[in-house]
Length: 366
Image (cartoon, rainbow, N blue to C red; front, side, top):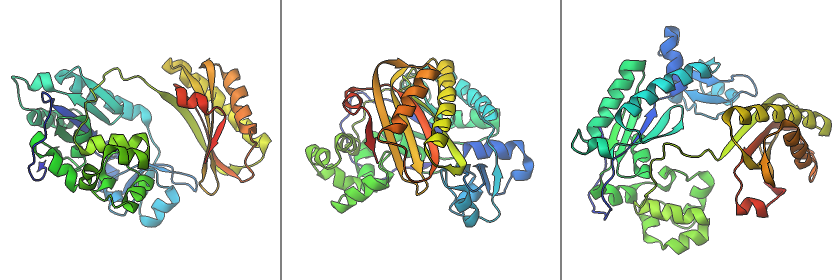
């Protein structure tokens, strides 16, 4: 078990006990469990072809630098002995249901983030019962007994810190960030470790001398908002350990999308329109099965040089019919026109619109 770092008091409301449970290399671990021949080998779940992408890499593969979302060709260069396995989502969903049942036996306050991770609010379970850290340890043990797989757990008093804690000692880790140590822990944390800070945001922060949480803590909230927009306020609050977001078991889905990476680049309106039509049919079926309705339709276009174009429009009514999706998506393709460069991926998605989306109808963003 890994503990956090030096002590510093932070004023809080009544303390919650939040867990973040994250399965270790989940898809790859399921494959290694189910096929003993894969155990101990560097394994990547995903496509190993010229256009394939790594979905999950085993820890043996990660030792070579193989990571999720990496092109398969790059992964093979880094790890010549890499074994690619096609994903089996039915198997992953079945294991995820087993894990979810374990969570729910402890608390009804479970917020799934994906098949392999979730937040749990165990405040009531810990009140008069075992401490939150003991609950996390028992959940890890129950997951291993039921599935043969390992999970890492983070324990803290808010979601942001619990998620950071779960990544401190992977794989099979258990880490806690206590309220009295939160500010000092965050002060020492590099900005890249703040959940939601990607490479571009990190570069902008570093350009302004903001390297660690202590630098975020020292700046005024308004200064960070001016620098990063609304997300600047979010990062300022997180650096102050201020995160009152509840664990939401019925968290509302905000988007649903489908996409296709082509084995051979597509070029020209006719070829792209045919792909848009196929995606519209797939998206409509997924919307129907998920019973999801949204007003904003987005067309994603990834070019051969990996630049991404995003075109969207927000309608006055929910969109779900395949014919309507096809018509609108084709209009987005035509405004301002199909790209002149070859296209390696197309995607279509429906989301819940907001005022900002309404104001940016048919906007083109690079």
